[in-house]
Image 1: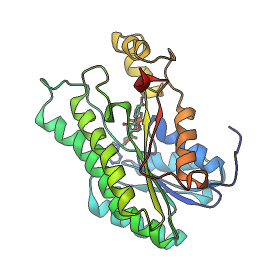
Image 2: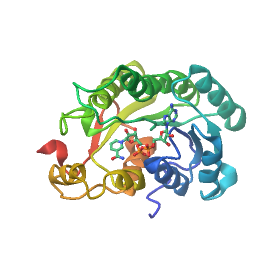
Image 3: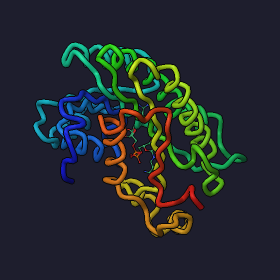
Image 4: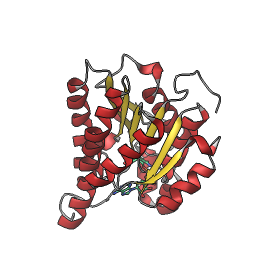
Length: 254
Ligand SMILES: NC(=O)c1ccc[n+]([C@@H]2O[C@H](COP(=O)([O-])OP(=O)(O)OC[C@H]3O[C@@H](n4cnc5c(N)ncnc54)[C@H](O)[C@@H]3O)[C@@H](O)[C@H]2O)c1
């Protein structure tokens, strides 16, 4: 995709869940706009593989980061400070899902989904925010979902709880940092045709429900979400904070 401007040029961006379906595309989009991307995920070998495929791999970095672990965050933040001396954006992208309903979700899965999606997002803001502030300001993009706002198709209760918290934590943190130059926004994709999602659901009843609930009648494309991340992470959105952007083919308008 064509470079839109220099809104991300030389900005250091920390990306979590960077080897997943959306993460890889986001890393490519940011690197394509000349950002320096710190790709993180649970498996550092996969992070390195992703970095190898980016434009000018040496400008970027790869780290293992378990977003539920506070020490993991402090380790990666100090590695970023050592190498780059600054951080300009955090993309809190890691999350896990569960399709169980309010009646059949288990405690164990509930705790994991809330741990990664909700607590992980808070820890990211807690540890990256101060470095972004010391670096002259920047942006936190919290990956949310239509399920952070509406009921979807009546399942995924733990995921909806985590994403609902991401939506309101975003506004809370945006107000906290409003005068210190750290902007915080949530991005709410509808159903996106990542390779992982298609492999799991393509052709199923659930896939038909996703399409039927989307007024545009198709799944979103990974590059459509990466484009929204690039807008929020860079200098095209300098007056946008505490806001929520929907890239959902019209789902929440219906
Ligand atoms: N794909 C969609 O349709 C869709 C829709 C709405 C929102 N989202 C959101 O977009 C984000 C990315 O989704 P995706 O489709 O790429 O998912 P994905 O499952 O392909 O990728 C998620 C990544 O998070 C990583 N991860 C899991 N637990 C982790 C932990 N404890 N610490 C660090 N990383 C961890 C996984 O290893 C994986 O690489 C998520 O926040 C998801 O909720 C996705």
